[in-house]
Image 1 (cartoon, helix red, strand yellow):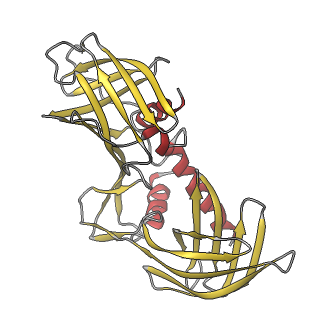
Image 2 (cartoon, helix red, strand yellow):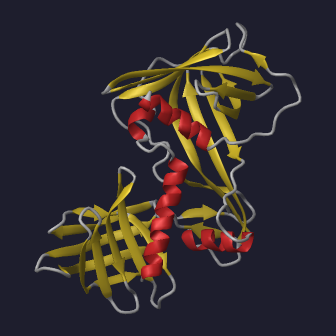
Image 3 (tube, rainbow, N blue to C red):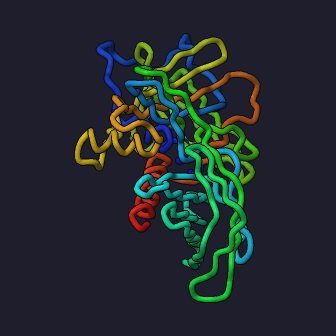
Length: 329
């Protein structure tokens, strides 16, 4: 059930607890609009940020362009985080392949030094780097770094810019999870068939075959609660309009888990998204999943796209790795 488990855990990850309705729950019936085969066609997940002033957020995963690596190692890095502890700021750029960091480049704004690391063999390259960060765009002029243990070298060059997201004052604004909800991760699609007897069958079809899992479900007012084969429960608000259905949840998941207090938590988000210090007033984690009853078509290929068992934990792992890199500067 490998691929179906990915869908289940994605849903569970973003729906730990929902406020229950007072109305008694009922199982699906022949008149319920939820009954039928629904294609999973899109998913939107991320942070809802509220600030006390007009802001432009910059998400480290939401960038355009790339910094190219050539020589002993070849590739590119596109995830960018700024370290304002130096003057001028330092820049950390890395890539993620199959949920793991592959390359990491650190550019020290105060010294002009560059350090490139290849995680596959722990090879480290050092040297002077020519670069400029103007607050939005990092530009690296071709520079060569040398392996600390040999004559091997890598050359770095390119331009990488944040795609800014406007946050109006006092308006919750979505900052999406990295790559969450991209359609068509590969050939195939995922469907859920809700039956009149209160059961549901989840099917994932992809280039490696077909996987299925059986669930049960209940509906109450505008909520649907699904229980999987391991008795794990997830609840979402849902809306059906014709051939389209949407599941939403403002996750009861503490976005400040692991921090000493709210001030420390909000300061971390302000730094991560390059917001003004003291401007963040609220952080919520949210998820929205779209379904369609239209003729089967390639939609969100859950099994192929989400090769991590827990995307929320994965993003936190990325952030932890970056934090450790920052501390090493």
